Each structure stands twice: as C-alpha cells, then as structure tokens.
Image (tube, rainbow, N blue to C red; front, side, top):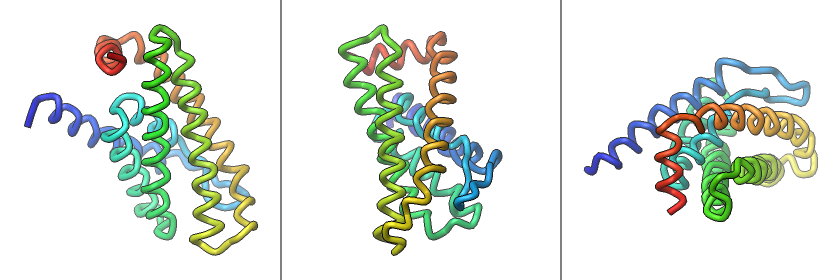
Length: 177
C-alpha cells in the first residue's frame, strides 16, 4: 500500500470517528422529531479534505455509526447513503469550481450549499418513500434546513482556519491539478 493510500485511510478513519462524535456529543432536539447536530460540518469537511471516494466513505460510515449508537436504526441505511452523497457532491463540486477559481473560498461555499441540498432532499425522499410517511415527510425539512445551515457555517469557519495550514495548501494544490 502506498503512503498516500495509508494517509488517506488513516485520515478517513479519524474523520469518520469525528463525524460520529460530532453528531452524538451536541444534540439539540427538534420539536419536529430527530435532532440538530454538528456532524454535517464534518461530513462536508470529509468531502473537502478527502475527496469524493474517501470522503464519501468516511462521511457515510461515521454518520451511520452515530445513528446506530443513538438508536435511530431505521435511519442508518438512509444516512449511510445520504451523507456519503453529501460528501461526494461537496467534493466533486468543490474540486471542479476550485480548478476554475483556485484562490477563492467561494467554491467551498457553493459546494457546501449543494451538498446540504442533497441532504435535505435525501432525507425527505427517504422518509416519504422508504419509511412510508408520504407528504408528511415535509415536517422534517425545516429541522434539516437548520442543520444544513449550521453545518455550512461551521465547516466554512473550520476551512478558513485550515486554509492557513501547510496540510490544506498541499492537499488543494495537488487536487486542483
């Protein structure tokens, strides 16, 4: 195994664990069911820092683990797929926009917005179609939007701090080529 693969595997494990912890540690119950958490910020960071494949794996597995630990077993399969898609979308859109605007922070914001839109739509469809709630699934959209905004804001703040590190600069110079 190459050193880059080992580094990606290790960082994926750390970010998956961080995703689980960020989802579990601070939970704000939603009056509409479920809870608001900080895990979405880590899901976005997984995509940005690890790229589409490793980021999707870390985000999906870490988020699903949080559902399993906190008793939301019915959501675990959906969470695995939805959070993986959020990270995948954020990574692909962020990378594509970063190639065109390498010095701008805007690609990350746009990628985060699109990624979190995937989350809101994904959970609506999962609840409506696979959990049988039908149109009543719309009740979860508001809390998912609040969660999305929190995830975007927190991930952007963390990215600003990380952008000053050599790790970040090396990672994104290599990815944008």
